[in-house]
Amino acid sequence: MTRRDARSPRQSRDPLGVTAHTKLLADITGKSVEVGLPPTAKGRSALYLHPLELREAGPARAAGWQPVDALAAHLVTATAPDGLQALGLLSLSALAAQEDRRVLCDLVPPPTALWQALGVTPRPSWTLLVPLIKPREPAAAPPVTAPLSIGLSGLVPITGQVVGGGGRPQAGVRLTAPGLGAPALTDLQGRFRLLVPADARPTHLTAVTRRGEVRLALRPGDLSQTLVIPPPPET
Image (cartoon, rainbow, N blue to C red; front, side):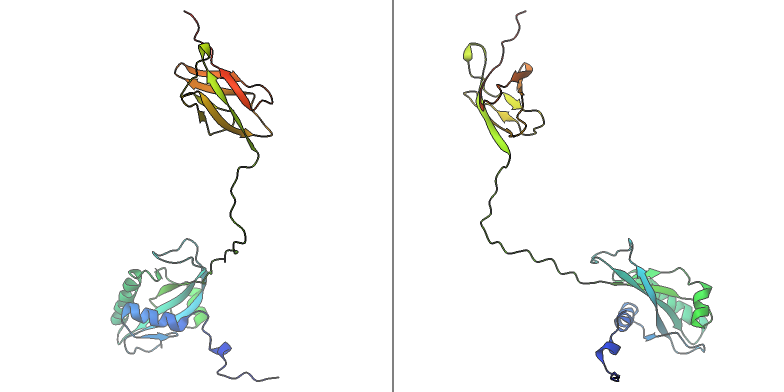
C-alpha cells in the first residue's frame, strides 16, 4: 500500500472554505478570528469560528449573489478577559455580519444537544452562513454551418378583392379568418392578402366595415376570391 504524503493536495483541500471564511469574518468584524472552539478559561479578546454543517440555500439570497447551491454554517463564539466584554464583542460581530451582503447571520441559539455533542458548556453565540457557489459555465452554442433560413410552413395565401354595390372596390375593410389572429386590410382598390392554414382553410371571412361585421362566404378550393359586401337594407 502506498503511503500518502502528508502534504498531498487531497489532504490540504478545504472544501468548506473554513480558512477563507475565517479571513472573511475577520475582514467583516476587524477582529482576530481563530478556528475552533474557545478555551474554557477566560483569555484575550478574540472571535472563534467552528465549522458546523452544510445547509440548503432555500430562498436565502443577498443582493448580487449568484445562484447558491448551499450555505456553509459556522458557529461563532467569543472570549475576553470578562464575560461582558466577550458578549459585547460577540454582539458587535453579529451586527457587522448583518450589514455585510456577502454573508447571512443566524441569531437563533443552537440547541443544547449541539453543545453536548461538542463537549462544551453552552455560551452566547451566533451562526455565520456563507454561500458556497458552484461556477456554472454557459453551454457552448453549436457552430452555424448553414445560412439561416426562416419561412412560413403550412400556410397558403388567400387573395382577392372586396367590392360593394355596383362592383365598387371597398378600401379599409378589415378581414379576419376564424382561429387566426393576424387580420388583413384591403387597399385602395379593395385588394387583400391573407395567410391561412393549408390543411384547415376557412369557409368564410369576417369583414369589419363602418356598418359593422359582415360574414363573407369563400368559394371552396379557390385561392383568389371576389367578396361582395351586400348593400345596407332599405328602410
